[in-house]
Every structure is written in C-alpha cells, then in structure tokens.
Image 1 (cartoon, rainbow, N blue to C red):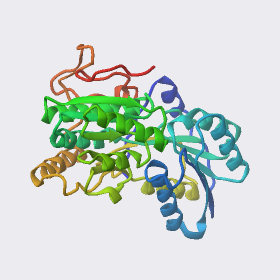
Image 2 (image 1 turned 90 degrees about the vertical axis):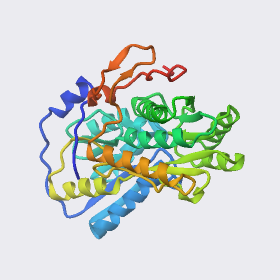
Image 3 (image 1 turned 180 degrees about the vertical axis):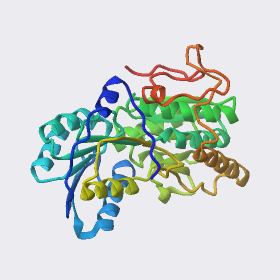
Length: 360
C-alpha cells in the first residue's frame, strides 16, 4: 500500500520521533476491534467490521478476532480497551475519533500491546494512527450534488465539528460551487456518529428547507430512508455503498476500504516488524473508493465525475487548490496554491460562501 505521512501538531510530531520499540515475531495474533456503532449499522462500523472479517479470513487460524460494538466514546471505550488488553489482545484497532485519548491512556498501561487508532493524530511507541482522505471523495460528491440539484439547495448532515468533518463540508461545497454558482449549503450538526432518529430528523429538516440533495457524515442509512419517503431527493452512501437504495435516491457513495491496511498491519505483528506510524491515504492509494454512480445521473455528468475522481487519484488535481478564501473573505490559498497536509489536518474554518458558524 502506498503510504503518505501527515503530522498534526507538535505533539504528534514529537510522538512520531520516538524510538521504535522492538517486537518479536509471532505465530498467531489476537486482534481486537472496537466500534462506536453496531457492526450492522450499514455504514462506518459495519464497513470496519467487514474489513476485520476479511483480514481474519486472509490469515485463517493465525488470527483470533475479538470485537466489541456500540462502545460510546469516553470512559466506556477505555474500559473496553482495557478488557481486550487484559484478555490477551496483541493489537487493538480503535475505530472512532473520540477513542483517541482513551487509546493513548490504555496504551501507556499496556506497552506490550500494539494499538491502531482510526482518524486521530496522537501516537506513541505502541500506538499508530490511520485515516482516509475522505475529502477527496467529498469533492466528487460535491460535483455530483451541484450538477444534480434542481433547487440549488444542498443539505449536509455533520457529526462533530472536528477537522475531518469540516474538511468534508468545505470540499463538497467548493466542488458544488464550481459547477453551479447558484448553489447554497445548509449544514445541520447532529453531534452523533450513529443515531438513526436524529439523522432522520436532520434529513427531514433539510428536505423541508428545500434541499433536494442531502450529504451526510454520519453512519446510518436513516437519511436515505427519509429521502426515499420524501421522493425526488438524492443522497449519497456514507462509508459503505448503501446500494440497497440505488438508483433512487442514492447518487453514489464514498466507500472506506480498510481491509488491505488491516492485513498489512497484522502481518507486521506476525513478522515482528510493526512500528508506530501515521497513515493518511486516499483514492489513489485505494483507501477511499467512489461507489457506482447510479443511473439517476446522466451519462455526461457521470463521465465528468469519473474524470474528477481519476485526476484526484493520479495526483494531477488536489481538491484544495486556490484561489480560495476563508469564510470571512480573507485570503487563504492563492491561484494554483495547494493546501498543505498540516493545515488540512487541523482545518477549523469554512471557506468563503458557506453560511453559519462551526460549533465550538
């Protein structure tokens, strides 16, 4: 797998500078996975779980898989990690941003256990982090949303005001605006990763505001169900294809492809070569997939969207390329200038044209 490394702040940089721990080769590995939602949520947690199962199948009897689903972020996750470590896990994958500090805390108590935290930035000798460049997929979604809306109103269900989510909103808006200057975004903050009732209410509220395309950075299929009930409202699959709703109202999807990474990291444990690192990969490296663009999209628009996808994958085009201003009108990126990874990793502002405030 192609690797890119990103440092998010001085703490992460210092952690990455630590000396590598020495690990011994192993004949078998006990691999633990902790999910913030149910393993059958239809999106984020389910896709991590399916990737974990694929990894376990790849290794056969060399790997014992243990999972815990629907673990709230915070103290509950720390207890779940501790239980797994005490149960003999060799490596534990913690798969939600809010598991970051608990992962660091538990790892300090179990220096012989390896930890992998998804979407975070804090590392240690026995803690690595990994994430996907979801904003690349959001660029394609934004393009399609801008082309497909008839009301020029696009809704976005956001989970938590963290850089990962803010990057996605900005990327989708930039690329919708490029192809449709009249487009407007309405963002609703759900303050949850997985809550079908809240997600459904958010989708319904956006639809009532006139949004005929709804994007989401939450995990359930509830927004798709709300759109299907409303009719003439398009959505996108999140983290998984959610193709059971194709071709209406789903346009396409962002698909998280975790299995190759899990296979690679567990193999490193078996080989005794595992080391802490910080992986941030996208479409080109195969960690972000764009789901099939449904028949609801005209062929010419589909061709353009695929060309955008391919240009991002090849590195020919970066979704955050200037000229771009911040929401307050101040300059951010000059003509042709590309945002650096450090800025993107800590992104905490909207681009010009987006309305509303980012919650603190």
